[in-house]
Length: 114
Length: 114
Image (cartoon, rainbow over all chains, first blue to last red):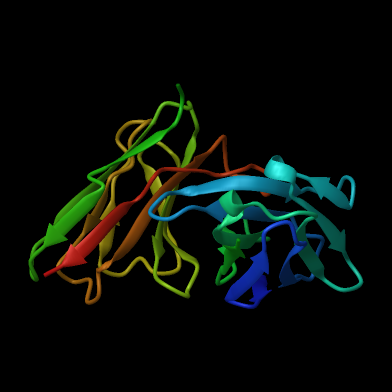
């Protein structure tokens, strides 16, 4: 079974600073990987996804993530944090079973300091 | 606008009562999903459905039931057998089952057992 580990349940950065949210996965075959964002009391919104094309994936709101097979990582970055980026972020990997069952990480809550 | 609606947004239930959470989508998606979200645990899959009149158990199906009588609707019933039902419930849909298909999420229903 596949799994996802997000390092750091809480990350705090200053406005304008680099955002780095870490995600490592385990998989015996090439995975499909996703980053979702959740604002308080709302559903999840897709930021970006990796589907075995380019290893550097650009998403919405200035976020991007790089797939590194050797490190089994898919870290999410943004060069300059905005106050509006404060939210919870989830990394997810698709299950290799017959159905597309997403396996989610525990989530990382991002706080932006003014 | 196409999307997923969930109702109600907040739901209170007395112990021993069954309650039904609504999920409707107008995206013409074949696959639909129900997740449960608890703080610090990410999202866990309850049930999913690929097609009308067919659904499969997810990782935590005990104490829950679903139906899929129409393509656009996938209601979830939380039964009295669910020992700890207080949580945030999210419904999602995707074009079909498949590893690369993005899942679209509804705004969620917060269930509280009194």
